[in-house]
Image 1 (spheres, rainbow, N blue to C red):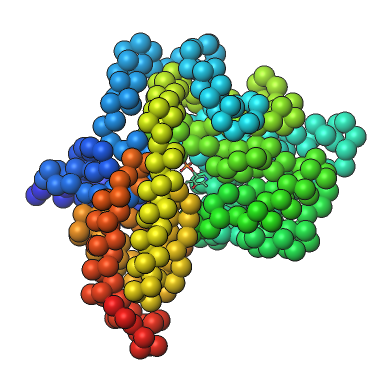
Image 2 (cartoon, helix red, strand yellow):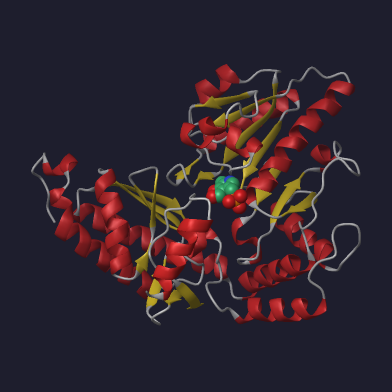
Length: 400
Ligand SMILES: Cc1ncc(COP(=O)(O)O)c(C=O)c1O
């Protein structure tokens, strides 16, 4: 039995069966490539679901892990260490917000942001304001798997098996300003959005919707909370923050922070010395190597190549996204599933979200020739297979 088969069998016996894993055993990585047990390389356009921004084996991350690992890994939040203040300085400078709380994951940061909103509304009530406890979240949202986060996550399959979830959440139609206005009232303590819905299919929030949410929240004192975004009262960050070491953060305004006092919220592991040291190394590397500008440039190229592909293959009905958070929506869920599997056979890793959306979340160090490799593989797959799938095959217009 191969090592992979042995691991599969043991996991099947011992783990909760929450994951439908691809049958590959990765043992290493270098740059934008993962390496499997047979030393074969895979072009990783998913980066551990948007986490490994610097790719694999980046010397800055290795150095930070080794140095901090030698010095101090964990202290708890009962004591000071050097990392939190330094990292908070970087996060507040870059977001324009005032204060930070460090958590471990995205869902934990979101959960804390929701608690902050409830506490803030409570503070406003104690000061005589008329404001309730309800949350407005968006349809197609995804905020994580813990109870608060899953309560504000739209898909019923994530929520319903665990009901009753946290009460007081209403969903607003995505980018529907009229629906937002209709559902907003003094009862609402926070409006919860993603600036680009990820799991929801790489769908950007419109400026118009964001502006209306901003204005409505300001009118009552409710908070505007953004999962991974800009210009809110509160934002929740995680994913690439510490380049693969778990770290989340709530970053908020001074006004929102008024609601939290010592002992109200906390964590054993959040913002530990190791995670903070690596996050500082990640942020400084992104800055030093100009990786945001690089990602924007390669992302534009990637998007343009996907658009070209969509003119050739009718199966691609939309291309969207920003920077290196990109999507190609297909007209068939079966074709999307097959495309992911066929890409993997060609050693290119992508995934599919919202049934029909091919999602690309590569490391920021991606280069144009990697994009060309991925586009060539997609072209080959659509040419070979797209005609067999119903939606456009029925129209008889397939050009590939
Ligand atoms: C927008 C958003 N919020 C929250 C989460 C949950 O993060 P985590 O898996 O780190 O708990 C995710 C994860 O995919 C996400 O995309």
